[in-house]
Image (cartoon, rainbow, N blue to C red; front, side):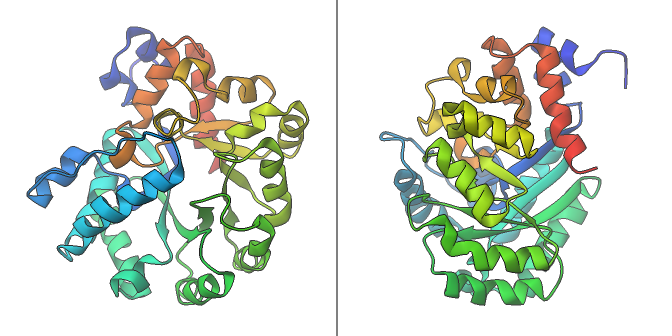
Length: 316
């Protein structure tokens, strides 16, 4: 690579150059990790874009149920195509380290065995972007009962394929402590533990989740910026927050990139990373978010390079 560095790419505003530099995406829901333009090419139609009015998770869930899920059901090949679109997007954006989740309910919902789900992930990875260090992640819906989730996880754990676990969806669905059994099970199987928390909840909910589930890192966690005490605790315990600015803005959790609380977290010593969440929904890759954070004046180019390195170094 030339002496033209990541900071230079940000200062010149060149997305083409920014995309050349290695990045990590550690908060990615892989079935929605591709561009909408890519989905429209192989769907033979148009996927209606997501628009948030109220800024709540129910709106997003409704879009998935009414727009995206029927799209997947219409053709069994679309599952593989969606996975491949996600790897193409990651590759085009310079992602070298990818942790991406697939819902543990997916196989049962669409009558696909765990073995076939894993096979599809392996095929998409090796055929599209084998150079990416891919760490597959199992996703858990917080609205489902612990008993049903445990029944779903067992067959997947049998293959020793997944490296991380993540709990997501409605943060208010049930108390975080209900999932302690699952997370102990996951840790005993050698998985790193994550959970979506502090996206809609408060600062104390972030600390509570880390303590109750012995989390290694947090997905979102932006509410922690509301408490100096919680931020200090997260920094002291070296808990990484995998933040998705585009998602936070589109879901109205923050007003803009310029006012995003990632600045407060960074200034209080909390290690943060930049991630996509769902490119299909929020229409922003990591490179675009780095550029918007820079152009908004929230961070300097050097600070953003530190954040970029945070993600890459976490996996080494």
